[in-house]
Amino acid sequence: SWTTGNVIEEQVAAIRAQVGDKRAICGLSGGVDSAVAAALVQKAIGSQLTCVYVDHGLMRKGETEQVEKDFVAATGANLKVVDAQERFLDALAGVSDPETKRKIIGREFIRVFEQAQLEILQEEGPEVAFLVQGTLYPDIVESGGGTGTANIKSHHNVGGLPDDIEFQLVEPLRQLFKDEVRMVGQELGLPDEIVQRQPFPGPGLGIRIVGEVTKDRLDLLREADAIAREELTAAGLDREIWQCPVVLLADVRSVGVQGDGRTYGHPIVLRPVSSEDAMTADWSRLPYEVLAKISTRITNEVADVNRVVLDVTSKPPGTIEWE
Ligand code: XMP
Image (tube, rainbow, N blue to C red; front, side, top):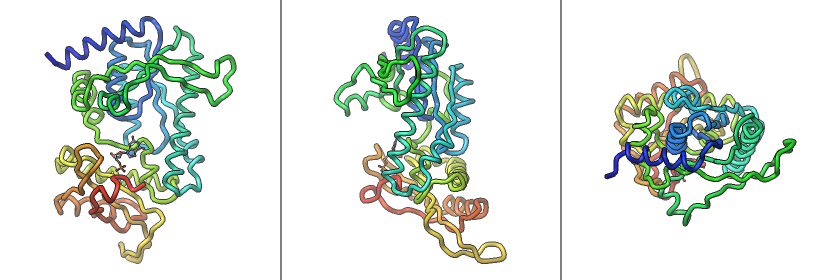
């Protein structure tokens, strides 16, 4: 019969048999799947696993700390955190076009991750022959079957290493659906903040700033987003909504009156949606009191924001994210 205990036991045995005494690398994104995959592999092979987390500076408040502290506390994993915030900000400077932003973030991410892999390969120890991925059953069905190996092509000149390094893939979640992954994660002792996390896009807050991405704008959006999340959680709405992007219209200003005088600040958009699979979505009819609380707090607590607006568009025609 299917129990999380059986799944864990089977996968731990399979991972040990596959990896043997070699080493493995796992990229952590902050999402559920990579965290649970890493926790399973960690349980199986312990210090033979090194996890890599790229801090691109586009995460929400507390998310990097969650990986740094809570994930390590729950699993005991070796974690290499790469602080690449400046690199991403530099690469994004002057860019407002959504697709260009996405391409830049994707490209920089791969470069930083590969550099970290090369550094791990150069460390003392057994051969690093495995790459752990949090591929789920639906991912495999959608893409028409897995590949089994990954070719990591080096963009950097690192002395003594081959241009192409081939890894075997370890995919311990490939028979599982999302809800089962969450149960396995819970059983492995991962905190709810990781296991019950709502979807968050890889390019992070970079695609929730309409306009150029700067450090100040990221900090502002992080504050507004943290307030929205706090109030939604306090109202017990986390399970009811699929996700709630909070968007900064950095290129828009409107007139307001705050304290003693006129302001000319930016709007923040709330985009709460309900959905089954993110392919279609409807805007969530949040209680007015909750919306009022979020609006009051954001305009009071976040400098340069003098207006909060609600996105009442379904998908289609709107996408969930604004970019
Ligand atoms: P859209 O905006 O296309 O979003 O309606 C659908 C779902 O996908 C998420 N999303 C992403 N997730 N990398 C991701 O991992 C991405 O580049 C990305 N873009 C959108 C979005 O948050 C929503 O859940």
